[in-house]
Image (cartoon, rainbow, N blue to C red; front, side, top):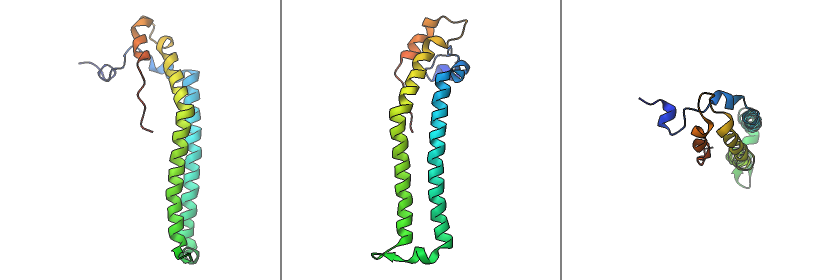
Amino acid sequence: MPDATEQDGRSADVDWTRIERSPEFRELTSRRHRFIAMLGAVTLVSFSVYLGLAVYATDFMGTTIGGVPVAWLAAMSQVLVTWAVTWTYLRKADREFAPLEQRVAERAGGRFTRADEPAEATAPAAEAPMERSAR
């Protein structure tokens, strides 16, 4: 029975450990992790402010602006923050992370094959178009 890497169409000859240790892959993951941490902090602070106002500033949240309660406006701001964070991530992913992913994939083709396998045996797998991941 073929293993999981052969079933999903990937070559079993690629040395994934060496790819993970490569400077290109480390740059990609560190940039992505820093960016996600920053967006997570923005989301957490925004939601914490909203919850703090809802719990401790009930009089303020009950006031109306143009007939609309401040609590409703604050809740809708959470939706807008979520959309803004998502849009920001997708924009950054398309402009910065995708080219880095492509560079990692291109360099992984010939450089990161196992020593006991010929390099040309895994080169076609590296040249296959990358599927876009769900972000």
